[in-house]
Image (cartoon, rainbow, N blue to C red; front, top):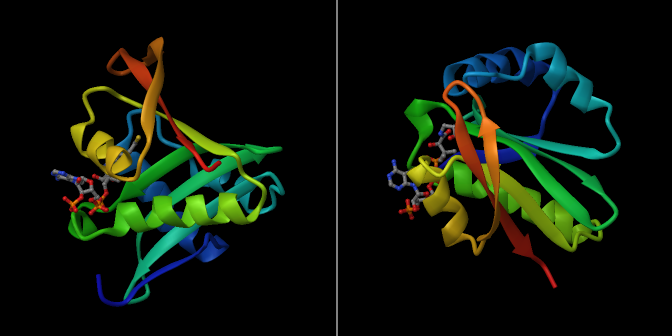
Length: 148
Ligand SMILES: CC(C)(COP(=O)(O)OP(=O)(O)OC[C@H]1O[C@@H](n2cnc3c(N)ncnc32)[C@H](O)[C@@H]1OP(=O)(O)O)[C@@H](O)C(=O)NCCC(=O)NCCS
């Protein structure tokens, strides 16, 4: 997408990102939960900006070489233009530059779009967490991307 920039998440992005969470998920992260990640030395959150407007975001936590992606969401108007892929690639780049060995995430088996995105980046299913999600109840697939 032209004019797409992936930047560290900032205070000024949080109102829109809290709206995005509420739009996408049945148990959304609040603005306060997002704000707490701004000062977290074990977290990495990126915002996608399209012509300066908040288009989406992704975030991960890490400990040692293990990185775990908590969130990925893109506003409907900006979907299918490579924004989600660019956000995950930014997290992967950050992880590799900071001693990451692998990145894991959970995803609903019914989320075909997200599964296609992750599969295209080389993630593979390594497990299933029974009844992980609520509203609606669903298992989670555990996906993993190894860097070494
Ligand atoms: C999943 C989501 C983040 C994808 O974001 P996006 O910016 O639209 O994704 P991209 O444009 O980067 O697409 C990357 C790949 O994902 C797959 N994909 C994404 N959206 C798709 C769609 N609507 N139909 C088919 N494939 C799709 C395709 O393989 C695509 O590659 P291609 O365009 O080269 O074919 C977005 O749909 C979203 O925010 N969904 C709601 C929140 C969510 O489900 N988050 C993930 C939680 S695990």
